[in-house]
Structure formats: structure tokens, C-alpha cells
Image 1 (cartoon, rainbow over the protein chains, first blue to last red):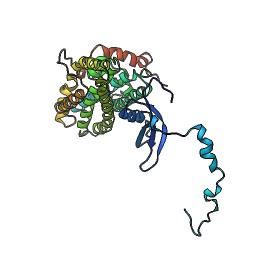
Image 2: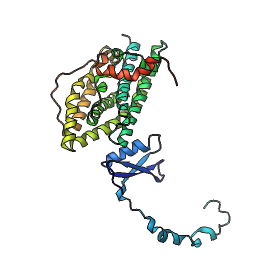
Image 3: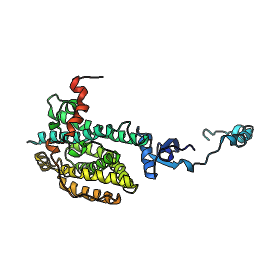
Length: 96
Length: 252
């Protein structure tokens, strides 16, 4: 990760309603956990977007790289049997 | 002074406190120590502007002499402004601003808490809503002070300097005049004695955690609620009111 002269970087996840998923919003700079949470609140919930926030130090995120793309994801392209295309819906089922 | 006059003046006091605090915080726009804090400072300024607007509107509505919130904010001179001296003090460095914010938001927190039991419905509603905002301001500023006090020698020195300079304006927060007498007797507002006791306890607790030493009280200055201000307010109003003074009733 590129170093800058600000505080360490944190990733911000926001839950918009109770029980919903935490979705990635972006990043903030902060010196510690409390500051990260408050900065996230100030940057990402100004217009009443959220009910709960997660902040995670960016360096704690383990990410796949561009080089891994082919071996990670391409083999899934021709495995049509992993999708439910051939599954017959039981009669009378409306929602599955 | 009758109850209505007292209530108008009291609403102006609340409005002016928020308005001047907001204007000072807004001076940080684009000058914050880093991007996130710059936005946090602007957020707090906007909270205060919102509080001021509510109370100016209430004062205008009570006065029923065709005055408007804008007129109250932009057409009164410094002697007519009823804010406390603390909020009008210049920002200084970031530690100075945070100290000012801390001392004031601790006060506002207990004041609004008490006013949430007011028997004036508008004041009660205002206090309940604003309490959430100032609680956050208090959290934000007190945590910065604790960081300063436990950070470097320089951050500690700057925070201590801010406390030494600003401490003299804190008695002014709790001054009471005939407005308070009238409103306390009618159950609209509260005596600042209980607020002062809570404020002292909380402030001492945080300052201790921040390794800061409360100075001896010297050169204590009071008078904000009676319209007696430091020289800084006039300069602040010059800038804030310029447009409405130069182009009265200008709109966009």
C-alpha cells in the first residue's frame, strides 16, 4: 500500500438497516479505533445513510491480486452445472 | 421583565451561543489538520447553525414585530448579542479550538439535558434534539484532548496553554441575570448551579485523563449574557454580517 503523510487508512462498512449486510463505503484516515469510527460517521453517515458502522484497518484486509485472477476465477466460467439451470421447479412452488 | 420578554432573550442567548460557535468552527473550513477532521469540524458547525436557526425563529415568532431569524442573526450589534464569552474567542491552533469546543460542549450537554424537562414545549423539543448533537461534540473534543495529553510534549504543551488561556471564561457560562430569575420561577429554564456542578465533575475527569492541570482562576471575565463582550466578537460579526449589512435583504 502506498504510504502518505496522513494517519493510517481504515476501510468503512455501513449497515443501512437492522439485520442488513454491512456494505463497503470507502476509506478514512485515523490514528486509532475511536477516531476511525467517528471519522467514518462524519464522512459516510451525514445524510442519514446508516445505523451501524464497522471500521477495519486496511492492512488487515487480505485481498486477492490481479495475478491470481486467472487461476482463481476463470475455472468457474465453464461449470454450468454449478448453476441451478437444470433444476426443475416442483409443481406449485411460487417462491424458492 | 415579564415572562415573554425573558423567553425571547433566553432564546436569543441560546441562538447566539450556537451561532457564534458555528461561525468560529466554520472558519476551519478547508484549513483542518487533515481531510476527515476538516469535515468533522464543518459537521459540528452545521449542527450549531441548525440550533441557532431554530432558536432565532422562535425568538422572532415570539417578538411578533415582523423580525425574522435572518434579521436577528445579521442585523444586531455586538452589545445586543447575548452569547457567552467562551464561544467568541478566536480559534488559535487546533488544540485551542478543541479545548474551547470541549469546555463549551460539556456545558451545552448539561444545559440541554436540563432544558429537556422545560415546561416550554419549543424549548423542550429544541433541547432534546440538540442534546444528541452536543453529546457527539463532547465525545469528539474530549477524545482529542486525551490524545493531546498523552501524545507528544508539544501536543501536551499546546493543550495546557489552551486550558490556561480559556479557563478564565468558564465562570461566564454559569452567570445568571434577571432573565434566568424570571424563567426559573416559571419552570421554563433551570438554575445553572446544578449544571455547574455536573460540568465541573466531568471536565475535571477528562482533563485528568488528558494529564492537564487546571490553572488557578485569575483575571476571570464575565458578562456575555448581558451583552458585554471581548473585542473579538465585533470582528467576527463584521465578517459574518458583511453581506446583509452591505446589501440589506439580499437574496439568492
